[in-house]
Image 1: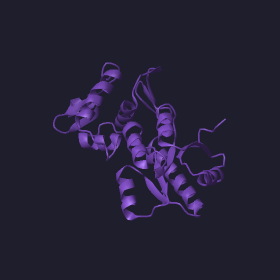
Image 2: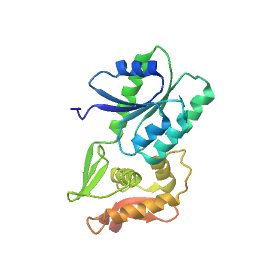
Image 3: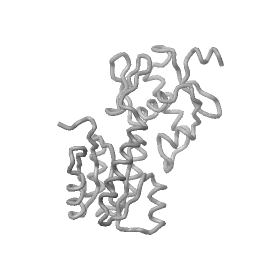
Image 4: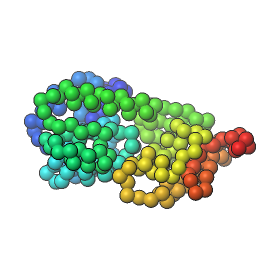
Length: 237
């Protein structure tokens, strides 16, 4: 049985030698690994499996890491770190990977313990950013299993609805612009407009039954963004 502190890695790599390196490098009980040798099988698995960190080879038999990065940043929690590992060391490739949403870029070499250290640092940073569970009035937000329940009953949320609601619960009474929410939840490379934020805010306000179930509501600041605000704060404003 895996410990709750085990880091579950999703590794997209088609080179058998590199896979064997990873198997040795992450053989410690602190890690569990699942390997994928094509982008198609990797993306299909992400629809129903959860990982703490991704290691992605840049060049795959059916494309490059750009497609995988776009899908991850559009559909999954933005806190999940992604490391691109490749044999290419061109500065333009490095810059492009970061623009597409990678958190780190590692050139394949014999310095495998450096890669291990980078994985540990990114995983630690991600876990500091999101606590495992927070309680907010009648709501329990479970960041490990991506669930929110109201008075013990699970609320049916999509992945992005959960990410947005969880971020608002972590930033009560803070004025957050639409652009900030778009970048934080959908990622810098997201090719969508701010109306997507408005749509998701409307959905989670309804699904969470805000105000009717608690003294909190998502307040619209016209022309700017939103604030998860208490009724008392409204009165004092």
